[in-house]
Length: 147
Image (tube, rainbow, N blue to C red):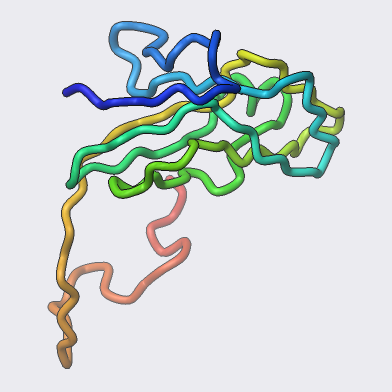
């Protein structure tokens, strides 16, 4: 499937998102910041990617954290996964938060998140008086144990 993308003025010169390996699930999104952008410990910053896209109807894109940034620096996507709807045509931006103890610097062109495209179905919710019974039933948080 081909998805049209538009490179915005501040994204010119950056590599377009690609899969890091042949079997990667996500395309790497890069920071389209003009200079170094500091994210202090405990702070969140909206980072531009310098691109917009036209997803086909029936698809969504999810913006997800990069595991290396999370593990090494405590930097992750705050609203993970962030959803990009098929009718959105604005710039893709990544809401990063620094959970680490040290300040973190986002540099131009740095890979900051992953973009995963999924087919999604629209459903119709139907109000009913009761639901079918299952073994789990209404048992929620922690009800299945940890082992």
